[in-house]
Length: 149
Picture 1 (spheres, rainbow, N blue to C red):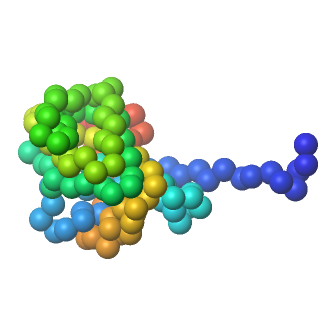
Picture 2: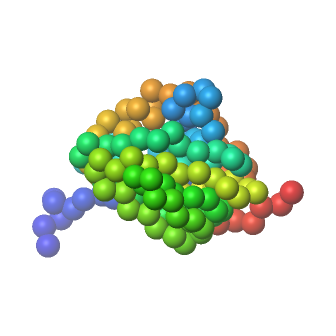
């Protein structure tokens, strides 16, 4: 093994994530985990956090495949007019050009990992939005820690 070719992995924790609302009136936030800047490749991984009643606006991508993995909560996923219920543990794969949206229909926040490959300017769109902080509930979900209220 050639030690000079060793690759050092990029490791981040939830306190390292930068979070944004794409626009001030949005009801979802995106916390960037990896993007082309940190991963040195054309992908974006974020945690999408939907407030109660929150949703993404209908959107589509020309080239990118977008994948979601629901961490916590429940909602619906719609793609090209077909709607299905989603909950923790469910995965959604949206092909390029599919008009899609995710909605939180539960009584608590909805958390989903969101992957986009290639990036297709997704990270740049997120970063152009309004910076927001992750709160204690967000950090507890991301760390899989109990939430005390």
